[in-house]
Amino acid sequence: MVREFKYHLFRYRRTWRGTVVISVVNPLLFLLAIGLGLGRVVSDHAASLHGTAYLAFFAPGMLAAAAMQNGIVESAFPVSRATAPGGSYAVAVTTPLEPSDIMLGHVMFMALRIAMSATAFVVIMAALGAAKSPRVLLDIPATTLTGLAFAVPTAAWAAAVANPQTVSRLFKWVIMPLYLFSGTFFPVSQLPLVLRVLAYITPLWHGVQLCRSLSLGTASPAAALGHVAYLAGLCLLGIFLARRTYRRRLYV
Amino acid sequence: MAAVTVLVEANGLTKRYPAKDRKSEPFTAVDGIDFSMRQGEVFGFLGPNGAGKSSTMRMLACVSPVTGGTLTVLGMDPATQGRAIRARLGVVAQDDALDSELTVRENLLIYGLYFGLSKSVVSERAEELLRFAQLEEKGPEKVSALSGGMRRRLTIARSLLNQPELLLLDEPTTGLDPQARHILWDKLYQLKQQGVTLVLTTHYMDEAEQLCDRLIIMHMGGILAQGSPRQLIDEHASREVLELRFEGGGEAVAAEKIRDARLCERLEVLPSRLVCSTEDGEEALAAVHRLGIKPASALVRRSTLEDVFLSLTGRSLVD
Image 1 (cartoon, rainbow over the protein chains, first blue to last red):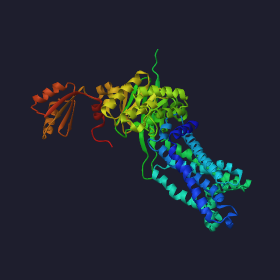
Image 2: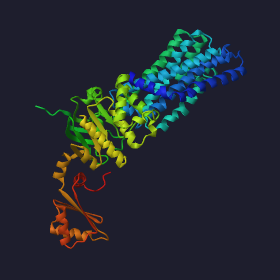
Image 3: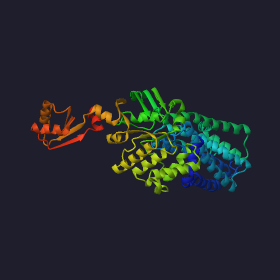
Image 4: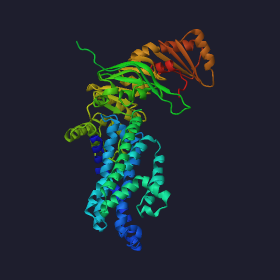
């Protein structure tokens, strides 16, 4: 498992430059444009924000949403490419590694990548004064968990589908709606009941709530644990499924 | 007494793939074959595409569960000891699967990580293998800059990083030009001299004849024949072959005359061409001339594995 992790680390050390833009610069631009730009338009006293400045409300939501995106970016196409003929899994599987080692090692690397981006984001948040509590540091593990809750099930799925074009649908049909309706930009209490209930089911809403309550210093242990349990449950389900899809795909 | 060490033993080895959907049937790629491989030899699987060679190779590499019969690799069972077996195997797949974003040297270094080898050991072996593959100067270059032959040599170099006892090569020279093929043959021969046991699949008869000590001719999942190239030729083909070419027809009439005169052990009639298997080609040719047959051209040659293969499987295209 560690060997597969080291493999990805080795590659990353030689190919990291291109990843900075999508994982750090993009969310940063969002943060500046929406948080500072739109935030000036939205009144600090908007009732639904409970007196929080919009930037402080939006930033942790964006942090969680960016983790979702990074989680899927780090898993969907990389796993799809690695399982394709001539991909890196085909080579790894002929070495002493087993499919589950390959999967767990790659997931470890995804966790590292999500945590790296989260750390950069939290530092920028703090610098912009968008963090209201020192507990924002806990947002780094919380965000990583959120990212993995998307990355691991995505990996399980990407290893099972042969066609990379199918994988690209994930971005259209999953990321975009979740981005918009999981409480990233506005509290879901603004939504009609049906959509609100849907939002409560989505993993991103739990990630957003967790990150936001930590950053604003309003987290209650029970709610936070609930969110953590939901997200961790998704990760475990993903690992359970991925063990099967990896083995099926790699041992034909 | 120097006992022959058997590295691989297969009995009734079978690979059946489940049906892809409800409409299709389960597919038997390898149909109960027996073979054994000895230490230090070059063992070949010869056969057309779809004969079951690659499926057999994947089972040997412990990345494809055996669905019937028994298989022992390096004295172990692939189903339960795959990890330990693979640690001592080298695998060269049909696909090079090199990382084109990394350099030639990095492709070797990164592979070493899979075996948990220390950095110093890996970099030392990498230099050695670059020399072996005649790629020393290419070390710092991106893989995308390599020719097909170089890529294949790099893939072989990579497979040797864990100093395997058994090297599996799936169609190592497919798609290479003649020069690159010959360089590769030399390299494989060098490995054999070093005591590495080689297993290769090929659909090139000349390659099998050049490289293999023993080989199996596979066809539709089964074994048609096995033995050394010489044995196979002796058993399944005549010593020589006389090929007669005709222009503007005439081969049918000639074939009849030759058959009546019983000149050949076996006579094949092809479009504008007759292929006559015989012990003495020159004598047969003289006899053909005595019959008053005037071919446009005639060629006498020794029988090759290709003749064995064609006589066993027939000439019709197997798809």
